Length: 94
Image (tube, rainbow, N blue to C red; front, side, top):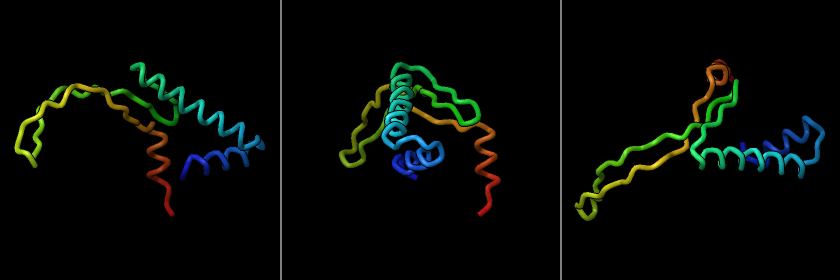
């Protein structure tokens, strides 16, 4: 499902114009991205958590040049679905 499909579905279910729904969805995603860029986690009960994970510095290898490189420590976004979400997807049989 694409963002456009999500916007179309929300618009049809709520009878709100697609433009307004599009702006809302964009604002929602921007708020999550900004919070995570600032190092904050985002918790949506019943859906899941957007969590910032810290990766430690590590040594890697460039196999084409046969050299060792240092991969610096960095943050990475992650999503952990809620138990309700997981069980709903798991129990859905086609």
